[in-house]
Amino acid sequence: MFRLILVSIFLILFLVLTTPAMLVSFIVGKFNKNAGDRIAMFVVNKIGFRSVQFLAGVKVKVIGHDKIPDEPVLYICNHRGFFDTITSYQLVKGPTGYVAKKEILYAPLLNVWMILMNCQFLDRKKPRSGMDMLLKSIELVKKGVSICIFPEGTRNRDAESDELLPFHAGSFKIATKTGCPIVPVTLINAGKVWEDHFPWMHGKNMVIEYGEPIMTRDLSKEELKNVSEMTRDIIQKTYIKNKAEYADFLNAR
Image (cartoon, rainbow, N blue to C red; front, side, top):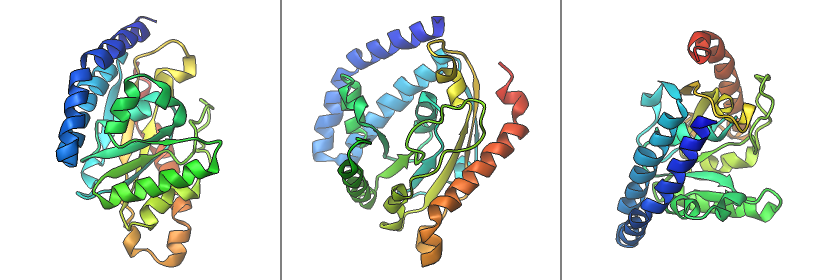
């Protein structure tokens, strides 16, 4: 409970005290979108998320980060908990918008930071919302902004299962319509930090691996049609491999 209290107090102070920086990011972004994006990313990632990770006692082993291309990409991640976003957002290259559920729009101040960081919001009850999200994400990629999405659609709540939920194939249109690379991202242990024993927050170790980018512009029509299953298979195999290979690190705390 002590960790949860620390994180909660920090988040409240962070959101209130960084309001001036929020305004600076907004104003700068009106004249130079890329500069505004980078200000927002610096404040949220380097100050906000890094501090939350430290206060929660989370240590992360990162594998394959150098494989991320120096161009806009579609990050495809499995999803177990809140710390999937906290940890992976700090590792993105360049401006990146995450796709989040619509409910986060009701979080005061946090919603403004997320909008400034190109995040897209999805109402899972409205099919039209999904189409709007895809179209906006495609436009962002064309403008040089990467997108990160959790194609399982919701976090996997089965703490004992190593099986990924089915992927929503529509998510991959962001890559197939723009030709941007797909970067498979495999995250392990995020749920064990908080969600698996809510409301308690435990210091845990996580492993993040970035797979070889899938260059969609080089794929055949048949391969593009099956790219969601191809990506899911990569993440699934990596999840099982790393859970065994780094078992001592993951279970050290």
